[in-house]
Image 1 (spheres, rainbow over the protein chains, first blue to last red):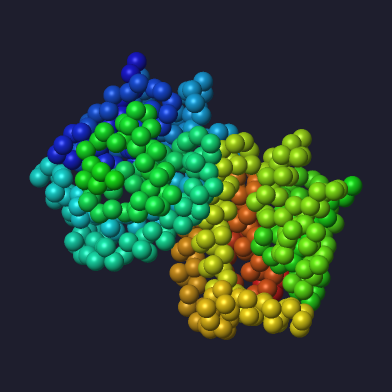
Image 2: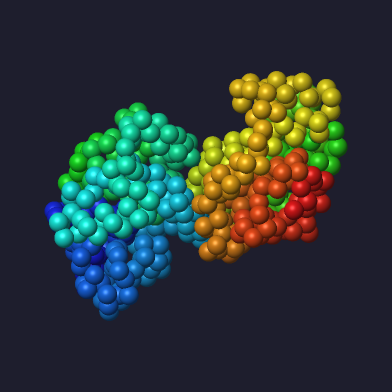
Length: 232
Length: 232
């Protein structure tokens, strides 16, 4: 039975842009598991309520419904062990969690602070109010204020990427010689930005830019095929 | 033949305090390899020149001399495969490098900015000038200025630890169910601070404090036995 991934999109169902969903989208491609990407919008709560979820990603695998990107990654690794590994062993599994925590506590807030105001125009009018009010509450101020002066903040943002950059100067992928869950976790943040914002987060000569390009090209260019504002 | 680890100390040979040396010290204990810790001071360049090194750690294993903490970790894992693993597989090896890069580019500069001025009084008078001038050049200002107002900067420092804290809320060690190289790499920074500075970097209720305590207690309390300014 084909797996189903509920993925966040805006008005355009092809523009799936959630960083959390991209983790799973790429992991499914990595595992070589055929899946149907089912566009989901903020108003579609009823579609995933049976999974105990109020946000995506939600993965359906036969009778099973899974939520939370980390738990879905663990599920895919453990239930499809004959397929290419996402973690590369127990150490990789544990440290992929550190990468995810770095992503969620450092990278996502920083990316959000640069691009969040670009998102409402891409949403269905019915979803805009929810998004504006929930994100304004999260950031504590109007979204246009959150991203004000963002060009001037790019150098500080790029400095935050230094650990990533240092590792990618030494090895082709975070995961080592081949990509793995850690790469997809971090990639989600950049794909999020690319799909919703014209702001070029990365300079062309940055090793992080090269790595992002390799992930955009992976799996037949699946991630590159999604409509992007910054085609970088 | 017993391995020899050249480790940085100050006037007191028992106070080995280099964060880079502690990575290897703990890794050797983890591997269960007997070793002689040989105190090394900044002026002792001649002792390690034959290893092509001008700083420590330097590890001697029979005829082999190794330098650079990352390369020594790889060596220990690959040359002593029958002993407990430091990486837990290929994924863990690759991602331990990301942890090291996070440590070197984020954690060490932050810890240094809080404690660096505590180090000169612990050194032999002959080493103080070298340390003061080289570190003043690195930070771009006198060391007492670098650490000025440090108590007020502790909240910002503790916020930097959020990725670490988030992971340690979920799992006992960075490496997972048992400690590994990633734990020792990060621990080095806290042991460095503990051995040279009275500044309490961590609050008692912080999961990072609990994790540090478990590493201080590991291997019969080897790290706790070193003279410390902050006994935390």
